[in-house]
Image (cartoon, rainbow, N blue to C red; front, side, top):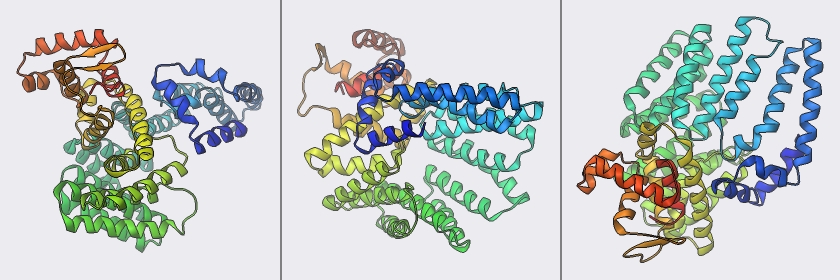
Length: 462
């Protein structure tokens, strides 16, 4: 298994894994791709060893060993799908496997294992940008955890749910979850909970457009990390403050806020120089500096920060979208980067949209996510990076030509508008919009709004 993972890391280091991602984005099935890879025999051999180990652990009644073997078997089978296109379904299957283990002999053991896996599915869904699944699994996990009375897990989940709703700009729901976390932090206080609560409050305030609240809470989180002597936590909080201050300062042309972002990012980078490992906080700091430089029209500096941010992200060797880093960096490079840099960013954005647009199945949440600040920026950058220069009249992709009215309809669709909102924008009835969309879906060979978004952006229709 280690040899399998080492091979994949080598592919990531040279960018070769993107060829697999492109095949997935184009609709090829992973089960058809994997046998063509040179490491397929390693995966088969590992699975056979894990199966024999599981049989032995079960006979011995070794619960820890059996659990490790089950998770390892699942990861061997589903790891590529979990990491590359992203699949909460596979996390759910791992959950079901674990709760059926013979060595979990009591109902309480099964309930705890199930709650922990639900929590894991929620965290995974947030990282991979499955906002609908993140919220659904979070609600389910919260019910299970409350029943068990695990206050530490309850606190962590409440905060994560607050962030999930903040990402959809649902401030009321985010504050409701913050209230639940605050109750635990006040009744069972710890230094770590105090810091985490302040960071969550700062992010929710940013989602609400509350500049003073964002600065107050995130600055307090930085100070708490400093007082506690936690250099890594201080670095993380500084990078978080820098990202939010840079975004809000850029949107509102607030030079003081941009200065806060710049100062915080520089402090985070100094700390990163003495910390071990490849945490993403340095990349976040550079992404914030790229956004600040763009806002101040210092485009050569913005491009350098953007390059450093993306290089730092690649060093973390994670397969998460990390849009908080990618989008500010992409914006800077598309504005003033070299042809080579622009081509690389276009490729990254195209792959990102192709994967993300297929993940969100709940239509209401899909619309809300694409209309959030992150969703809007992703759509804008992906669209601008794909649009042919000087295109007029009709647009052609492959052998299919599209009229301006069809392109306009698809553009509104990619912006996350509902049929009602598209109708209002175009002066049509909802029935007319639904009919035209249905005709377009047939024309481009898709069956859903998500698939249409992928084709529209990747096929350079909009």
